Every structure is written in structure tokens, then in C-alpha cells.
Image (cartoon, rainbow, N blue to C red):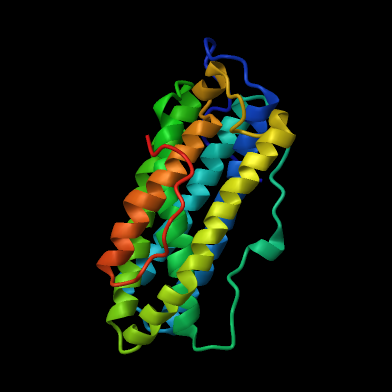
Length: 257
């Protein structure tokens, strides 16, 4: 369990935290650990394929960032009255290795974890931060959002480098072939969140969020949907097109706001 160096007490005028606030911030601690583990794994792969030293250094810095995010998120959880520890699914803390050449697995990780995952994270955290006023939560979201922009850019830089290597044509074809399934997984994750909100709103950070919960850094389902659709239409399409990677016709299910 992370040990926060920051105060674990909310300000006296902070609104009372709900169980949903505590559950969401603990979930974020778990997500940051997972991001750190996956990036550490990717960094090893970058060493093994002799990637540029600056990309390897960037991966190491991201691992450090994610652990700072985990510690800060845990401080918010404690300030909200939490007393538990994160539960990590260890089987999800490593990247899958195929029997293909390693560069193909690096490409998959770069696209799905960073080009897709970190790009959508920027828009999500920007919305989470917009109405967050509890100082310990706002400070954490400020730091996370600043870092997520750099993490997103790392993914697109890594993709660009991969496509410029001798295996570039092969990797571009791989990205084009597998991108539809990756995008579907992003959309499926959003749909799963919607179903969870409908089935168990007490423990879900996106259903019927109150003003006080927004102050603690949560957001409503409509905002989540808008962030997802903005990313699909305003980020994924132009960014992949710039790399000459075709994107499937994207299904925007809500207003992009």
C-alpha cells in the first residue's frame, strides 16, 4: 500500500465524502499501479529492440510518474475516510507476449496502452478536474493531468519511431488490421461502465454524481460519454490518419460536447 508524504486530511470546509468517492479513488490507486507495471514491462521490451535511449528514459520516467499518482490518489482516499488497501489483479500487471517478433508486440502495446489509453485519459482527467475543488483531490488531478499529456505524447512518438524502422510497412499493416478490435475494447469498457452505473450506482463513479462528489473529482455519466466520443472523433481519427493508419468508421453515441 502506498505511503503518502502529503496530508491525508481533507480541509475543514470540504464536503463529506461518500462511499462512491472512496471506492473510485481506491480504484484509481489500483489503475496507477497497473499502468506502472505495464510501462515497466514495455521499457524492458524497448531495451531489447534497441529503441532510442530517449524513449527508454521516457518509459522509466512514466513508471515513476505512475507511482507518484498512486501515492497521491491514496492520499485522497485516506482524506475521504478510506481505510483499506488496493487490490491488484496480478495477472493484469504484465504485457502479453506472442510468438511473433518482439517489435509486433511493442507496436500493440504502444497503440493500445498509450496511443489509445493515455490519449483518452487526458480528456477524462481534464473533465474530472474541471469541477474538483477539494484541495487534496484537485492537487492530485492537476499533477495527473499534466503528466498524462506527456504520457500520451510518448505513445505517439513511439508509434512514429516504430513506423520509421525497417519493419515500418509491416507494423503499419498490423496497426491497421488490429486497430478496429482495440477501439472496440475501448468502447466495450465504456459500455461496461454504463452497465455498472445502472446496476450498482452506489459503487460507481459515474452514475447520478452529486455536486459534492464532483468536488471530490468524480464526474457524471454524460461527461464520461462526451469525453469518450471526443477522443474517438477528435483525437484517434486525425492522429492515426497522420501516420497513414486507416481507422474504422467510428460510432459516436453521444454528443461530443
